[in-house]
Image 1 (cartoon, rainbow, N blue to C red):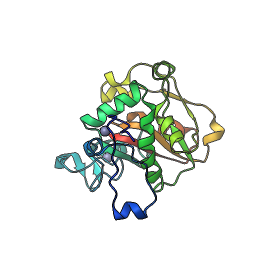
Image 2: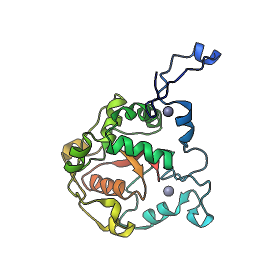
Image 3: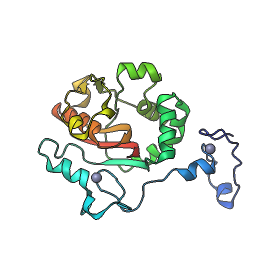
Length: 233
Ligand SMILES: [Zn+2]
Ligand SMILES: [Zn+2]
């Protein structure tokens, strides 16, 4: 067996535990796994940003400052119930995701989908909706990484959103991004009316992509919106 990321041979450690537990497929080698930092412990209840290492002025009670701002804005208040991110967006994960995303390394979805299945147990949802890529990006990459995650997890996805804005988002400031409207359109309103939606994306940075998607869904009758991302920036 070889590590999905670095290709190193994985030698499984046999312990009493592993003898009795169901054989689990090991997908990443120890060195690679060690470089991923799981988000756990004290973190923002809304976006799962870790409080560890975050200056006091960037948090307010159980919320981080970003979330205080979103929730304090009448335009965005109550759009996103809760976001859960798995790992810190450190240099290693940045590299992993860029391989996954830009170089079309579909196989990495197999590693992340396992935790997706775990995390989803904590959420009450009806539909899994991947954040879509623009047609250009989809053509470049060959697949949508959020969709890949859901498919690899063996779950059903609902492609409820379509992206209409194609300009590169990352080049814009937070303010600019927030004020951009119409990034998405709804594919089929009947699919989402009265439903609890779980959005799936790769990275939560400012949250603005998820917020735009969430707002549009809610305007079209979605009951509630939560989200899952692999990384928290
Ligand atoms: Zn490795
Ligand atoms: Zn937060």
